[in-house]
Image 1: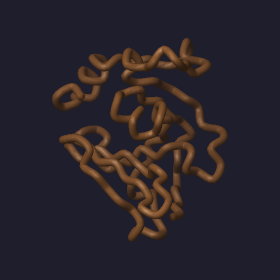
Image 2: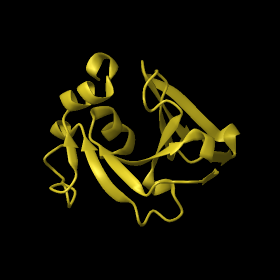
Image 3: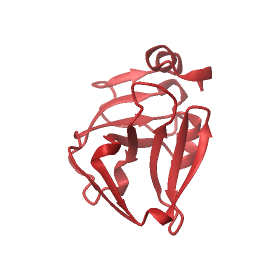
Length: 135
């Protein structure tokens, strides 16, 4: 599985929600990429699951790697995919600008620099992004 992404903004975010933690094994560190700027080779190996009423997740059915999180409901994020930075050939150079669901972060880890980025609680995310059902 390979992909090409054009015009990637070197800004990333961290999600601590329970679903992302279960999907990744810790927290999702992801980069929002416009779907129109992405091309995938090996699309026959992309498996998808509508993981909530508003979003789906995809992974490689050959190796199991997480590929993207995509909002499927009408929202400001429609038309984008959140790619884990670990699937980039070179994951260096991304600036972490926020952590969401920060109040759901386990106390067993912390990311350096959290005092310099936007920290959003579950309720902040519901209010800011109009998350259906507040998941």
